[in-house]
Length: 186
Length: 190
Image (tube, rainbow over the protein chains, first blue to last red):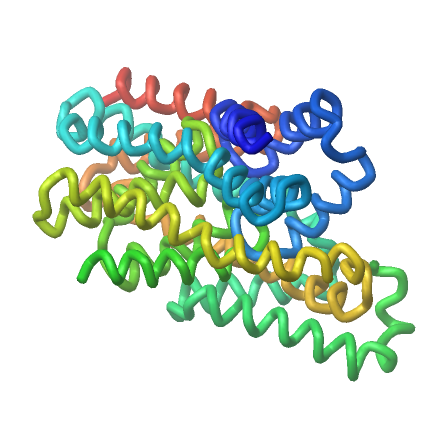
Protein backbone atom coordinates (compact mmCIF):
# COMPACT_ATOMS: atom_id res chain seq x y z
CA UNK A 1 0.00 0.00 0.00
CA UNK A 2 2.82 2.41 0.90
CA UNK A 3 4.55 1.58 -2.34
CA UNK A 4 1.35 2.14 -4.25
CA UNK A 5 0.93 5.53 -2.59
CA UNK A 6 4.48 6.46 -3.48
CA UNK A 7 4.22 5.45 -7.14
CA UNK A 8 0.83 7.11 -7.57
CA UNK A 9 1.95 10.39 -6.09
CA UNK A 10 5.28 10.47 -7.87
CA UNK A 11 3.35 9.93 -11.09
CA UNK A 12 1.19 12.92 -10.22
CA UNK A 13 4.32 14.90 -9.33
CA UNK A 14 6.11 13.97 -12.53
CA UNK A 15 3.27 14.81 -14.88
CA UNK A 16 2.08 18.12 -13.55
CA UNK A 17 3.84 20.85 -15.40
CA UNK A 18 3.37 24.26 -13.88
CA UNK A 19 2.58 22.91 -10.47
CA UNK A 20 -0.13 23.73 -8.00
CA UNK A 21 -3.59 23.86 -9.44
CA UNK A 22 -2.55 22.12 -12.63
CA UNK A 23 -2.34 18.92 -10.63
CA UNK A 24 -5.88 18.96 -9.25
CA UNK A 25 -7.59 17.19 -12.17
CA UNK A 26 -4.81 14.60 -12.43
CA UNK A 27 -4.86 13.96 -8.69
CA UNK A 28 -8.64 13.64 -8.73
CA UNK A 29 -8.51 11.09 -11.50
CA UNK A 30 -5.89 8.98 -9.76
CA UNK A 31 -7.19 9.14 -6.22
CA UNK A 32 -10.95 9.24 -6.74
CA UNK A 33 -11.65 7.50 -10.05
CA UNK A 34 -8.81 5.04 -10.45
CA UNK A 35 -7.99 3.94 -6.91
CA UNK A 36 -11.19 4.95 -5.14
CA UNK A 37 -9.21 5.91 -2.05
CA UNK A 38 -11.59 8.75 -1.22
CA UNK A 39 -14.90 9.92 -2.70
CA UNK A 40 -15.39 13.11 -4.65
CA UNK A 41 -16.97 15.07 -1.84
CA UNK A 42 -14.11 14.35 0.51
CA UNK A 43 -11.70 15.29 -2.24
CA UNK A 44 -13.32 18.72 -2.46
CA UNK A 45 -13.16 19.11 1.31
CA UNK A 46 -9.48 18.28 1.34
CA UNK A 47 -8.98 20.73 -1.49
CA UNK A 48 -10.48 23.51 0.61
CA UNK A 49 -8.34 22.60 3.60
CA UNK A 50 -5.16 22.42 1.51
CA UNK A 51 -5.87 25.93 0.29
CA UNK A 52 -6.37 27.20 3.82
CA UNK A 53 -3.17 25.63 5.16
CA UNK A 54 0.21 27.16 4.52
CA UNK A 55 2.66 25.31 2.37
CA UNK A 56 2.63 23.91 -1.09
CA UNK A 57 -0.84 23.20 -2.23
CA UNK A 58 -0.03 19.97 -4.06
CA UNK A 59 2.08 18.75 -1.19
CA UNK A 60 -0.69 19.41 1.30
CA UNK A 61 -3.17 17.43 -0.76
CA UNK A 62 -0.78 14.51 -1.02
CA UNK A 63 0.21 14.40 2.62
CA UNK A 64 -3.40 14.64 3.73
CA UNK A 65 -4.61 11.83 1.51
CA UNK A 66 -1.61 9.66 2.37
CA UNK A 67 -2.11 10.31 6.05
CA UNK A 68 -5.76 9.41 5.88
CA UNK A 69 -5.02 6.09 4.21
CA UNK A 70 -1.85 4.91 5.97
CA UNK A 71 -1.19 7.19 8.92
CA UNK A 72 1.89 9.36 9.34
CA UNK A 73 4.02 6.97 7.30
CA UNK A 74 1.58 7.25 4.42
CA UNK A 75 1.67 11.03 4.66
CA UNK A 76 5.46 11.15 4.48
CA UNK A 77 5.64 8.67 1.62
CA UNK A 78 3.03 10.59 -0.40
CA UNK A 79 4.66 13.97 0.17
CA UNK A 80 8.06 12.63 -0.88
CA UNK A 81 6.40 10.99 -3.87
CA UNK A 82 5.12 14.34 -5.13
CA UNK A 83 8.37 16.15 -4.43
CA UNK A 84 10.79 13.47 -5.68
CA UNK A 85 10.53 13.81 -9.45
CA UNK A 86 10.69 17.59 -9.39
CA UNK A 87 13.71 17.66 -7.07
CA UNK A 88 15.58 15.30 -9.39
CA UNK A 89 14.54 17.14 -12.55
CA UNK A 90 15.54 20.56 -11.21
CA UNK A 91 18.84 19.23 -9.85
CA UNK A 92 19.78 17.96 -13.28
CA UNK A 93 18.77 21.26 -14.86
CA UNK A 94 20.66 23.28 -12.24
CA UNK A 95 23.83 21.28 -12.91
CA UNK A 96 23.37 21.65 -16.65
CA UNK A 97 22.42 25.31 -16.49
CA UNK A 98 25.44 26.30 -14.41
CA UNK A 99 27.75 25.16 -17.17
CA UNK A 100 25.72 26.35 -20.12
CA UNK A 101 24.21 29.62 -19.04
CA UNK A 102 27.05 31.62 -20.55
CA UNK A 103 26.49 29.96 -23.88
CA UNK A 104 25.48 32.67 -26.35
CA UNK A 105 22.31 30.91 -27.54
CA UNK A 106 21.12 30.06 -24.05
CA UNK A 107 21.74 33.68 -23.07
CA UNK A 108 19.73 34.93 -26.07
CA UNK A 109 16.90 32.53 -25.31
CA UNK A 110 16.61 33.72 -21.74
CA UNK A 111 16.90 37.35 -22.71
CA UNK A 112 13.62 36.81 -24.53
CA UNK A 113 12.10 34.70 -21.77
CA UNK A 114 12.69 37.07 -18.84
CA UNK A 115 10.15 39.76 -19.77
CA UNK A 116 7.64 37.02 -20.53
CA UNK A 117 8.10 35.54 -17.07
CA UNK A 118 7.25 38.87 -15.50
CA UNK A 119 4.08 38.93 -17.61
CA UNK A 120 3.26 35.37 -16.51
CA UNK A 121 3.43 36.50 -12.91
CA UNK A 122 1.48 39.71 -13.51
CA UNK A 123 -1.36 38.09 -15.45
CA UNK A 124 -2.88 35.90 -12.68
CA UNK A 125 -3.27 38.98 -10.46
CA UNK A 126 -6.23 39.95 -12.57
CA UNK A 127 -7.81 36.52 -12.81
CA UNK A 128 -7.25 35.92 -9.10
CA UNK A 129 -8.95 39.19 -8.24
CA UNK A 130 -12.26 37.45 -8.85
CA UNK A 131 -11.66 34.33 -6.79
CA UNK A 132 -10.21 36.44 -3.98
CA UNK A 133 -13.49 38.40 -3.85
CA UNK A 134 -11.85 41.73 -4.54
CA UNK A 135 -14.43 44.49 -4.82
CA UNK A 136 -14.36 48.27 -4.85
CA UNK A 137 -14.52 48.25 -1.06
CA UNK A 138 -11.52 46.05 -0.39
CA UNK A 139 -9.47 46.97 -3.42
CA UNK A 140 -7.15 48.99 -1.18
CA UNK A 141 -5.92 45.78 0.47
CA UNK A 142 -3.98 44.36 -2.49
CA UNK A 143 -2.84 47.85 -3.52
CA UNK A 144 -1.45 48.70 -0.08
CA UNK A 145 0.10 45.24 0.26
CA UNK A 146 1.79 45.62 -3.11
CA UNK A 147 3.07 49.12 -2.34
CA UNK A 148 4.45 48.16 1.05
CA UNK A 149 6.47 45.33 -0.47
CA UNK A 150 7.55 46.87 -3.75
CA UNK A 151 8.14 50.46 -2.68
CA UNK A 152 9.01 50.21 1.00
CA UNK A 153 10.73 46.84 1.11
CA UNK A 154 8.44 45.38 3.75
CA UNK A 155 8.76 41.60 4.02
CA UNK A 156 5.72 39.71 2.62
CA UNK A 157 5.66 37.78 5.90
CA UNK A 158 4.47 40.88 7.76
CA UNK A 159 1.77 41.45 5.18
CA UNK A 160 0.51 37.89 5.59
CA UNK A 161 0.48 38.12 9.40
CA UNK A 162 -1.13 41.55 9.35
CA UNK A 163 -3.80 40.52 6.83
CA UNK A 164 -4.68 37.38 8.79
CA UNK A 165 -4.93 39.15 12.13
CA UNK A 166 -6.67 42.12 10.56
CA UNK A 167 -9.28 39.89 8.95
CA UNK A 168 -9.98 38.14 12.23
CA UNK A 169 -10.22 41.35 14.26
CA UNK A 170 -12.40 43.03 11.67
CA UNK A 171 -14.79 40.09 11.46
CA UNK A 172 -14.94 39.70 15.21
CA UNK A 173 -15.41 43.28 16.35
CA UNK A 174 -16.30 45.62 13.51
CA UNK A 175 -18.24 43.78 10.86
CA UNK A 176 -21.73 44.25 12.31
CA UNK A 177 -21.42 48.02 12.14
CA UNK A 178 -20.66 48.09 8.46
CA UNK A 179 -22.55 45.04 7.35
CA UNK A 180 -25.39 47.04 5.83
CA UNK A 181 -22.95 49.00 3.68
CA UNK A 182 -20.94 45.99 2.67
CA UNK A 183 -24.05 44.26 1.38
CA UNK A 184 -23.67 40.78 -0.04
CA UNK A 185 -19.97 40.78 -0.72
CA UNK A 186 -19.41 37.23 0.44
CA UNK B 1 26.77 28.23 7.60
CA UNK B 2 25.07 28.48 4.25
CA UNK B 3 23.30 25.20 5.02
CA UNK B 4 21.79 26.41 8.27
CA UNK B 5 20.73 29.60 6.54
CA UNK B 6 19.14 27.71 3.64
CA UNK B 7 17.25 25.58 6.13
CA UNK B 8 15.96 28.57 8.10
CA UNK B 9 15.05 30.67 5.09
CA UNK B 10 13.19 27.91 3.27
CA UNK B 11 11.40 26.73 6.39
CA UNK B 12 10.18 30.29 6.74
CA UNK B 13 9.11 30.38 3.11
CA UNK B 14 7.24 27.10 3.54
CA UNK B 15 5.26 28.08 6.58
CA UNK B 16 4.28 31.54 5.34
CA UNK B 17 3.18 30.36 1.97
CA UNK B 18 -0.53 30.87 1.62
CA UNK B 19 -2.23 30.85 -1.72
CA UNK B 20 0.04 28.63 -3.79
CA UNK B 21 2.82 28.97 -6.33
CA UNK B 22 2.79 32.56 -7.49
CA UNK B 23 2.10 33.94 -4.02
CA UNK B 24 5.22 32.16 -2.88
CA UNK B 25 7.36 33.94 -5.47
CA UNK B 26 7.11 37.22 -3.60
CA UNK B 27 8.36 35.54 -0.42
CA UNK B 28 11.16 33.73 -2.20
CA UNK B 29 12.18 36.90 -4.03
CA UNK B 30 12.30 38.85 -0.78
CA UNK B 31 14.44 36.26 1.01
CA UNK B 32 16.66 35.08 -1.81
CA UNK B 33 17.24 38.20 -3.89
CA UNK B 34 16.62 41.15 -1.56
CA UNK B 35 17.82 39.89 1.81
CA UNK B 36 20.46 37.25 1.12
CA UNK B 37 21.55 38.17 -2.44
CA UNK B 38 21.95 34.52 -3.32
CA UNK B 39 20.58 35.28 -6.77
CA UNK B 40 20.24 38.32 -9.02
CA UNK B 41 16.91 39.48 -10.43
CA UNK B 42 17.63 37.88 -13.79
CA UNK B 43 18.69 34.57 -12.26
CA UNK B 44 15.44 34.64 -10.34
CA UNK B 45 13.43 35.17 -13.54
CA UNK B 46 15.33 32.27 -15.14
CA UNK B 47 14.35 30.01 -12.28
CA UNK B 48 10.71 30.95 -12.57
CA UNK B 49 10.85 30.12 -16.27
CA UNK B 50 12.55 26.79 -15.57
CA UNK B 51 10.10 25.94 -12.77
CA UNK B 52 7.18 26.66 -15.03
CA UNK B 53 8.43 24.28 -17.66
CA UNK B 54 9.40 21.39 -15.39
CA UNK B 55 7.13 19.08 -13.43
CA UNK B 56 6.22 19.64 -9.82
CA UNK B 57 5.18 22.50 -7.58
CA UNK B 58 6.96 25.78 -8.26
CA UNK B 59 7.91 26.17 -4.58
CA UNK B 60 9.89 22.94 -4.55
CA UNK B 61 11.44 23.68 -7.91
CA UNK B 62 12.79 27.04 -6.90
CA UNK B 63 13.95 25.73 -3.53
CA UNK B 64 15.93 22.97 -5.23
CA UNK B 65 17.46 25.36 -7.71
CA UNK B 66 18.28 28.08 -5.19
CA UNK B 67 19.75 25.51 -2.82
CA UNK B 68 22.08 24.26 -5.51
CA UNK B 69 23.10 27.65 -6.86
CA UNK B 70 23.58 29.33 -3.49
CA UNK B 71 25.94 26.60 -2.26
CA UNK B 72 27.84 26.57 -5.57
CA UNK B 73 28.25 30.37 -5.43
CA UNK B 74 29.79 30.02 -1.97
CA UNK B 75 32.53 27.95 -3.57
CA UNK B 76 31.61 24.52 -2.26
CA UNK B 77 32.10 21.36 -4.38
CA UNK B 78 29.24 19.97 -6.42
CA UNK B 79 28.23 17.19 -4.03
CA UNK B 80 27.70 19.80 -1.33
CA UNK B 81 25.53 21.77 -3.73
CA UNK B 82 23.38 18.69 -4.36
CA UNK B 83 23.02 18.33 -0.62
CA UNK B 84 22.05 21.98 -0.35
CA UNK B 85 19.39 21.48 -3.02
CA UNK B 86 17.83 18.54 -1.23
CA UNK B 87 18.04 20.32 2.11
CA UNK B 88 16.33 23.46 0.77
CA UNK B 89 13.55 21.40 -0.84
CA UNK B 90 12.83 19.43 2.32
CA UNK B 91 12.95 22.61 4.39
CA UNK B 92 10.01 24.00 2.41
CA UNK B 93 7.94 20.91 3.08
CA UNK B 94 8.46 19.85 6.65
CA UNK B 95 6.67 22.53 8.70
CA UNK B 96 3.52 22.68 6.54
CA UNK B 97 3.53 18.89 6.56
CA UNK B 98 3.37 18.73 10.35
CA UNK B 99 0.81 21.51 10.41
CA UNK B 100 -1.32 19.80 7.78
CA UNK B 101 -1.37 16.57 9.77
CA UNK B 102 -2.29 18.30 13.01
CA UNK B 103 -4.77 20.95 11.98
CA UNK B 104 -6.34 19.36 8.94
CA UNK B 105 -8.86 17.52 11.07
CA UNK B 106 -9.79 20.75 12.78
CA UNK B 107 -10.06 22.59 9.50
CA UNK B 108 -12.15 19.85 7.90
CA UNK B 109 -14.67 20.42 10.66
CA UNK B 110 -14.42 24.19 11.07
CA UNK B 111 -13.17 25.22 7.64
CA UNK B 112 -16.41 27.01 6.91
CA UNK B 113 -16.63 28.63 10.34
CA UNK B 114 -16.73 32.40 10.70
CA UNK B 115 -13.26 33.11 12.18
CA UNK B 116 -11.55 31.10 9.45
CA UNK B 117 -13.62 32.92 6.86
CA UNK B 118 -12.79 36.30 8.40
CA UNK B 119 -9.07 35.62 8.27
CA UNK B 120 -9.23 34.64 4.64
CA UNK B 121 -11.48 37.51 3.61
CA UNK B 122 -8.51 39.83 4.04
CA UNK B 123 -5.70 37.36 3.44
CA UNK B 124 -6.89 36.45 -0.04
CA UNK B 125 -6.93 40.01 -1.43
CA UNK B 126 -3.58 40.68 0.27
CA UNK B 127 -2.05 37.71 -1.51
CA UNK B 128 -3.05 39.19 -4.86
CA UNK B 129 -1.08 42.26 -3.79
CA UNK B 130 1.87 40.03 -2.94
CA UNK B 131 1.90 38.58 -6.42
CA UNK B 132 1.62 42.01 -7.99
CA UNK B 133 4.60 43.14 -5.91
CA UNK B 134 6.67 40.21 -7.18
CA UNK B 135 5.85 41.18 -10.75
CA UNK B 136 6.70 44.84 -10.10
CA UNK B 137 10.01 44.02 -8.44
CA UNK B 138 11.00 41.84 -11.37
CA UNK B 139 10.41 44.67 -13.83
CA UNK B 140 14.05 45.55 -13.40
CA UNK B 141 17.02 46.56 -15.48
CA UNK B 142 18.35 43.01 -15.34
CA UNK B 143 15.22 41.56 -16.90
CA UNK B 144 14.22 44.31 -19.31
CA UNK B 145 17.52 46.13 -19.92
CA UNK B 146 17.21 49.94 -19.89
CA UNK B 147 17.26 52.86 -22.35
CA UNK B 148 20.76 53.74 -21.12
CA UNK B 149 22.06 50.23 -21.75
CA UNK B 150 20.35 49.34 -24.98
CA UNK B 151 17.28 50.97 -26.45
CA UNK B 152 16.81 48.02 -28.75
CA UNK B 153 16.68 45.36 -26.04
CA UNK B 154 14.53 47.60 -23.84
CA UNK B 155 11.84 48.00 -26.50
CA UNK B 156 11.96 44.35 -27.53
CA UNK B 157 11.57 43.38 -23.86
CA UNK B 158 8.51 45.59 -23.44
CA UNK B 159 6.97 44.18 -26.60
CA UNK B 160 7.61 40.62 -25.43
CA UNK B 161 6.10 41.49 -22.05
CA UNK B 162 2.92 42.84 -23.68
CA UNK B 163 2.73 39.87 -26.00
CA UNK B 164 3.06 37.40 -23.12
CA UNK B 165 0.60 39.31 -20.95
CA UNK B 166 -2.11 39.52 -23.59
CA UNK B 167 -1.43 35.95 -24.68
CA UNK B 168 -1.95 34.51 -21.20
CA UNK B 169 -4.78 36.81 -20.18
CA UNK B 170 -6.94 36.86 -23.31
CA UNK B 171 -5.94 33.82 -25.31
CA UNK B 172 -5.08 31.51 -22.42
CA UNK B 173 -1.88 30.36 -24.06
CA UNK B 174 -0.17 27.79 -21.84
CA UNK B 175 2.74 29.24 -19.81
CA UNK B 176 5.18 26.66 -21.12
CA UNK B 177 4.30 27.43 -24.72
CA UNK B 178 4.62 31.14 -23.92
CA UNK B 179 8.10 30.67 -22.45
CA UNK B 180 9.15 28.67 -25.51
CA UNK B 181 7.76 31.24 -27.94
CA UNK B 182 9.46 34.17 -26.25
CA UNK B 183 12.71 32.23 -25.95
CA UNK B 184 12.68 31.49 -29.65
CA UNK B 185 11.85 35.13 -30.35
CA UNK B 186 14.91 36.03 -28.27
CA UNK B 187 17.08 33.65 -30.29
CA UNK B 188 15.90 35.18 -33.56
CA UNK B 189 15.91 38.85 -32.57
CA UNK B 190 19.17 39.15 -30.62
